[in-house]
Amino acid sequence: MNVPRDGALHPGPDLAPAAAGRDVPDAGDEQALVERARTGHDDAFEELVRRYRNDVFSLAYRYVHNREEAWDLSQDVFVKAHRSLRRFRGDAKFKTWLLRITANHSKDFLKKRRLDTVPYNDALEAPGAASVAGPDRAYEAQELGQLIQAALDTLSHKHRTAFVLREFEGLSYEEMAGVMGCSVGTVMSRLHHARRKLRNRLTRMGVAQGAHDE
Amino acid sequence: MNNEQLERRLECWFDGELGSDAEAVQAALSQSECQAYLAWLRELREHTRAVAARPAINDAQFPAFMAGIRNKLEAPPRRHAQLWALASLTAAALIVAVSLFLMFNGAGGNGTATVVEAVETQIDGATVNAYSSDDGSATVWVTEPDEEDAWVSDTQGEIW
Amino acid sequence: MNLAALAIVAASLAAEGDCPIEKPVQVTMVAVQATRSGPPRTAQPEHGLVFGIRESGPKRRKEFSKDLEEIRPALEALDFDVFTKVNAGKAVADAGREVQLPINRDYTLFVTPLCKDREGRIRIKGRVEEKVLLRGNKKPVSRQALSFTSAIAPNKPLRLGGFRLGQGELIVVLSVDEYTPAPGPPPPTAPQAPQPSRHPAAR
Image (cartoon, rainbow over all chains, first blue to last red; front, side):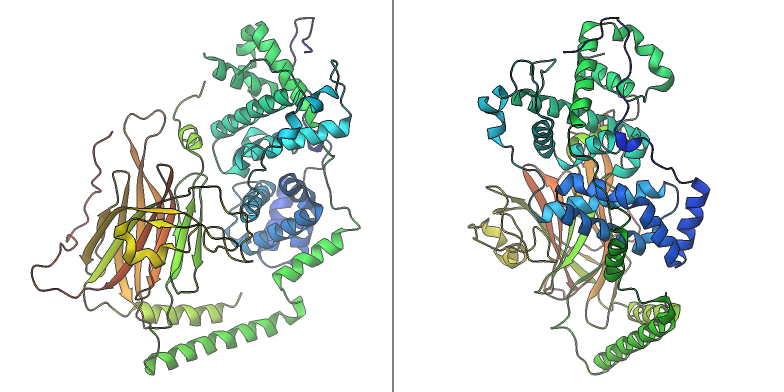
């Protein structure tokens, strides 16, 4: 476990790369764009789709792990958004509103598919899986990624959403609260539970060493 | 402050969300347990970067993506908007005419289904959907969030 | 979009709503706890239909408590295996008067008949209130789990479901009919003035 030796403690590494370097649309410009889209200007709606397609697509993908399904889901999200534009009050960012639709629509989609949670694959916890790493836990990045994804898939929808929005999409707590339709306190609670459950899963997989044995 | 509360505060600090309260946790940060927990959080974040890069719809794919949205909206080209309005008006008038016909001919009753006109919930995080069945009955279904959220989301004070 | 069309449709609906109910309305409620004895079915639902409403693939035997035979057809399509009656009630109200039907100590149903449309459906508005104990509160507080407006056709009940109840879910089967007095004293009618909700004391 890598504990800093100098005693100085620093906040976590930079948030997910997805959060960095993205163009942030001007708020006023976005407001005008939304208003034009709301009044039926197709070009404005298309611009909104162009700007936020990857935010929606990325989040949808985190749920279904399949590009084709994420593609369809993302289109459905924008269709819903288009039909609900009149109800968008502008008291939240447009992106927040879109991601909220995405999370809810993905949940409904997975529920219909009976895939709300993926049964944990016990084979991933078998001694064979852990022993591949060796004592220095040097996993191939791809295998590690698969294990991480498998652990994520065992989380409930709300916990997975909290973790994905934070660690993959780089949203702030407040933005996450807007997407998930809950308070910041609930965001913190869900994120904490997600991290704890992931720690337990990954520890049993041999990917990480738990700080507290439970 | 119990372990769970401390862990949550550490996570807030780790996520850069504590703001002016950051100094308040400095005393706790020197504890070995806190250092170990923060080390785990760093490890978890670095592990998650091993997951596949952020998928994207590139510019070349965008036209097809947008076309699919338009197909699903079944929106006609703008130049046909007036024609669409006329067609909708005609359809609405037809609905009224048929309804009046049925009213004055005493039809209805056996073939009439229960309909749900509006639904709403005040449960934070819940969704409500309404469905009709082939037998003419209807269903309203509330999907509630888990109980732990109901507790936390309505907390009046600090959660520390 | 088509304001003229919308106005026509709205006017036609309003015309139906203007049709008053001549007789009092009897509201009948049966509350059921529904549970699953095993994991959800893995069979895919039909496209466009929703989990919990249609089943496909191998069927599991469903169990109904004996006092549910009358409403069994209203429950069979639901994706649960065991149905147990929780409570039942009837109340009579004039149009515009609210009736209260307690379900259990946590849930209460409120219904207000509105009018009767040309198809013979009785339009109602209703809500299910839930008592919940929230962290930081010493006593349960009441919240609106569901509010709805519906036009209920004869013999075509409305199901309200998804509320948490023990290890299962609460389902309320609601039907409304014009009240036909039976010989003898009538059942209680709705009060003239709105009454505050009566909830049992805190646990």
